[in-house]
Length: 469
Ligand code: ASP
Ligand code: MG
Image 1 (spheres, rainbow, N blue to C red):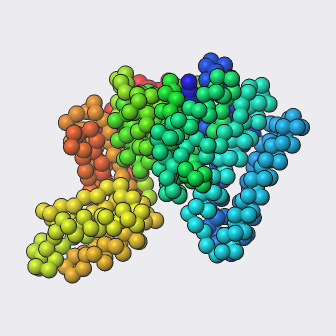
Image 2: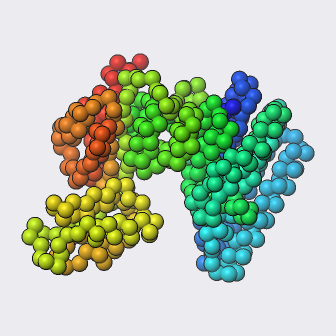
Image 3: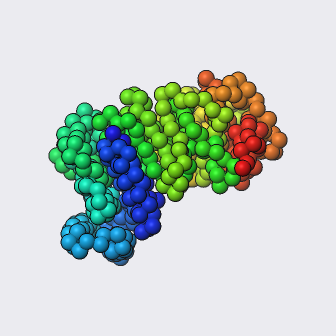
């Protein structure tokens, strides 16, 4: 049994949808037990979230934009790809019911002048529902049995709207009860990603990019042979291909390596939570490209086959480094305590600010955190409130985090990386390495990222010169 999760790019336009349907049909022909998990169309979730937030402030115009966008984009695809009049009529009816639902909710928010997290989730979940409805119909039109399944029936979550956590056991039972009979009857379930529902049936979402997690949960529940995330990249690459055109996909990775990459990339590449249900059951995860479906992509497994491309450079831009430090000779009042540092990091976490790197040192009495630029001002405020008197709070922005991951380099990883950065005249603001030495990370000025990544990629041998064809 295979789980195929399609990201927004797979539904970008009529051509893409046609290709996506072909990919599903090919997989289905090879192994009929297929579950499809859908994301919303590109930009739809953002438009819905904007509409929900604006509605509460009287911005009904935004809601109107989202509603038109939702309707027009899906209608365009349906008009081209759903040729059967009856199917199209039924689809349009179901879509307009959902639109009425959106209208009712945005109007209620506008009337109340407030938006609850619960209301926002109900609205945000519509993008996936639209996508799954339409994809199921197009699949049927193309000759395979398919049926839309709302993940609110499958994934049981707590009531943390916006980032709901699933109850695994209950969800697994429901997934099997609902999907197995369909699969046995030769029907492809087309499931809405990103969404779930509480025990009392209130719609929740699993957090942005949560569709991958939905696929992993279903894969774990049915003990799938593989979960495949269909994206717009050739897998996990040795570096950002926009910076290093010769970056290559890593053929295979271990769960641990993939987890390190997920964390160091600030979840850009993959979410750690997507890996967790699969790693513990040894279910392989593939990352493949809808734009180049014949390429193998990257396979994450328990025991990867070693290859020459054994490491990667992860660069995350648009960050800010906030630091507090005292002078070398502090007065009694501003003596450094680790409790103070701990209370500041706890405050950041309570405020929902994700720190990509945190470092405290009693030796030079500093606390340093790396956050995303939009969180910088608030982080600085928290620092300035906590660290008074003799402390200086400094902000470096924009900065980037560049990490080199490679188990193969062993103890030479850090010195070779440092050497490469020296060669490229990079101004390292901070660095950190893993205890077991499998990765090293550097914070550097955003403007130097390209030079740094290119030099590291070359010096560490991630791009063999023989790869040119
Ligand atoms: N559509 C949702 C988002 O944009 C979930 C997903 O794409 O996985 O975050
Ligand atoms: Mg995604």
